[in-house]
Length: 73
Figure 1: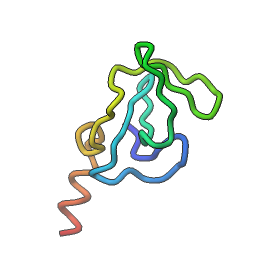
Figure 2 (figure 1 turned 90 degrees about the vertical axis):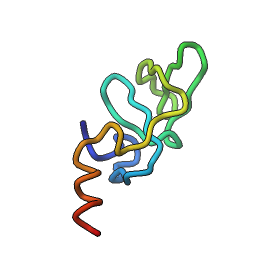
Figure 3 (figure 1 turned 135 degrees about the horizontal axis):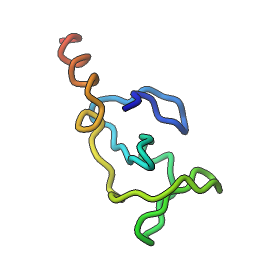
Figure 4 (figure 1 turned 120 degrees about the vertical axis):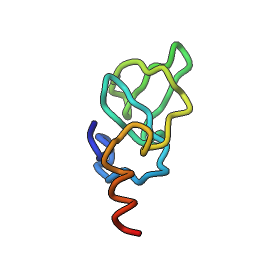
């Protein structure tokens, strides 16, 4: 999975809240989520559906982030 948000193009940090839409990760704050089975929009562009409105921590879904954090310490 990509280590960058498709919307803002910023690199994910290990504790970012991430929402995956159609196998593409986004920061939760970059999206507008609507509770109709959760449909995600970026501005007015329909991206698709997601299962989790609350998002997930970036390190839970992006494998190399945890490794980078360990190397920095």
